[in-house]
Length: 409
Image 1 (cartoon, rainbow, N blue to C red):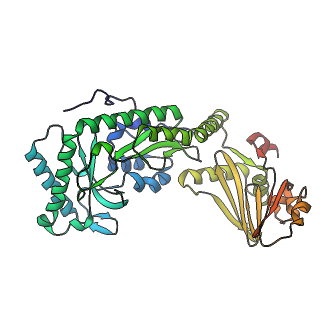
Image 2: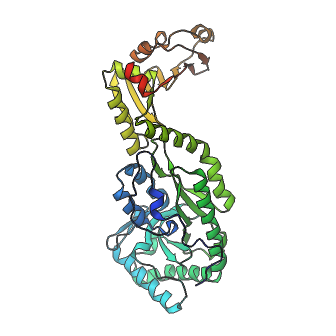
Image 3: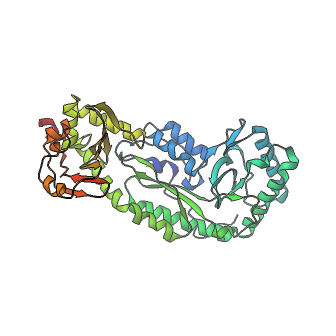
């Protein structure tokens, strides 16, 4: 087996480390102690089933990166088609026979857990993908669903295509191994630099269609995913990013560092104080007007956000839809009504208004513009006004109230 000198062997980033949480996700939910980059789609799904926290948010993004695993017997949906379980079994048996015939050192025959349906390739089309384990890296080869259904003869071109890619990767495996090891190390270092809930979770070569001519696998695109603190201050997968170089991976830090630092600070403060968060003064006024309990509402909104990216507390009253959202530790308010909307400090009214109205609105209570109980009770005043051809925008200082202040308000 070829093992480059820069390969990441015995890395400190194990699978279970990716799930050491921050704030509400505090326990290891994965007991598989393997290198993170070796995760299969089934491993990710198993983690989801053991997660007591933001499993819904994980599920929403699962298909975007690892795909859907095959259970070994049932038909597997691939795009708009279904591939029968017996056809997938036939594919695996043919691949195993061919690979055994070749006698390639360090190339493992694919098993049930190496089959998944996922999007990839230049067209991002969903195909059945087989992960070929080269021990130092994993080579994913994608097969169109149309290749199945005709027995051995219809599968032969796809099997031959997979084998061509395996042989091509074998010839260049030293450079592929070295490149992937460097990319892994860069992702580990970048994740450690971001810190606080960030860990490498997925770095896999983008699936290569079996009917494409074997290319230089040492220059292939990779998909990268890490865990990050989301706006519920729980660790969840980042959006998948296409990467080719170490520089692309380091851009992950530039993209997320500022937000992650702010969220780490907020999460630490909430843990240290035993608090469920803060809320804007308009949010508190809305809660009081609706005769809700502030602390129960805060906790309910947070639980909704943990479970779903758009999780909120909503209720219809006073002729409008009132929405409370727990975002980055603060309960914020949105209101939707016929004439426009209010979004966390800014009121927007549809229509054509005279320019003089903007100046006349400065310093006036927002409740004189729109008579809503939350605006009346909070007493917020207009600090900025702007009129466009289509709408009238008014904003106010949006003071955030900590828990101690909420208790006496």
